Length: 224
Image 1 (tube, rainbow, N blue to C red):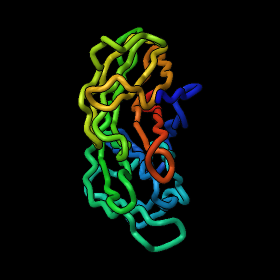
Image 2 (cartoon, rainbow, N blue to C red; image 1 turned 180 degrees about the horizontal axis):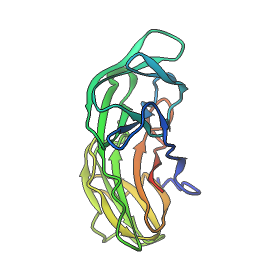
Image 3 (cartoon, rainbow, N blue to C red; image 1 turned 90 degrees about the vertical axis):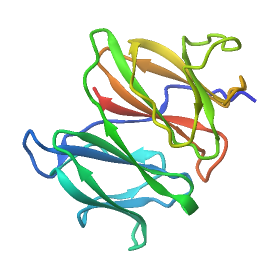
Image 4 (cartoon, helix red, strand yellow; image 1 turned 45 degrees about the horizontal axis):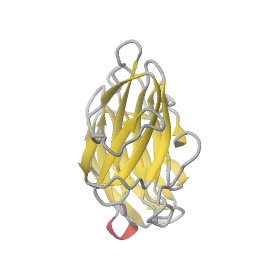
């Protein structure tokens, strides 16, 4: 059954230049709670809480951090129960997105290296992350709104859970993004993406809260 999802893609997350430290060599990172049945999260960097009570389908804006070895901890809110305990390395002048993904029983970190280079004039750049554990492998179509996909070739084919696409350059405009099970034309999620000149965006496919259908897409604001 085709699910029509009204409006723009959900929960646009802005970038704020806040956090610890300063200077041109700083790293930046953000965290997204993408685990559908996990509790809300308290986020700690090197023992300092940087966000409390982060719900599913939400994220923190980019935070500055000193480059080097960092310790990122995600606890069930209000407890000392660590759901994710990640030792990672941030490089200077590099942006990162850290996702808490999968169902709670298999929750894991997915660390993305972000490229917030501005696109050429008149264009936007879009990256897609398959973060919906219940959807299985999917084909993804990015087309003009209402375009017939019955004979169309997917923009991305056979995308496995936790796969991350390259950044795609698209002309500024309005597009429809549709997901189907791999090899099928049965639409299981559809939504509208509006991209404007100079933007960089990351789109996450997600389960419903607690897992499963209906699926949705969360659009993160990377640049502009």
